[in-house]
Length: 168
Image (cartoon, rainbow, N blue to C red; front, side, top):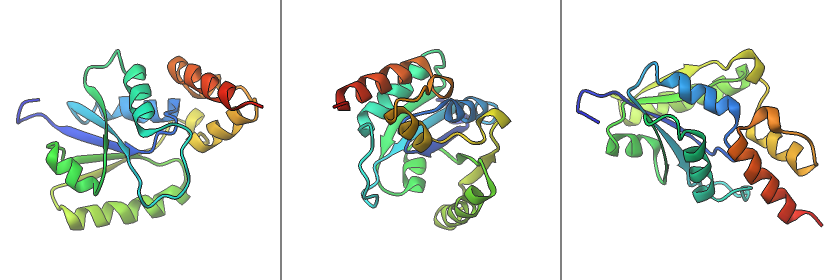
């Protein structure tokens, strides 16, 4: 990217990436020339993910094969440090509900305190995605439910493989 390019970071766990995430990421391209989809290594999080960070990055790359302006990567440490190191000045976050806002607003203010030149952009989901979360997809999939409407085909394939390997 050139120095005049606007780089945004869309951080998260993406375990797995859903069509709701995809929508927010694609819509982010209206505000940025490049979007870095950054999968967080969370040393502070106790629960084990369904997919490894490397698998999540690979899924995101598959989902966005058609979009060269989207790059999937992983990061550790503070998001604002990662953003600085990658030349990003915009953080994009999706908000599904009022309950998301309180936490995200607090994080946006802290990020601004840590790195004032970083702005946070909140995007509301399309109505059809407002209830959707990766944790619901994992739960429904683990119980044998149909999650095809909620994930892209490459993600669906990996979910089937994962749940087939964990079935008794």
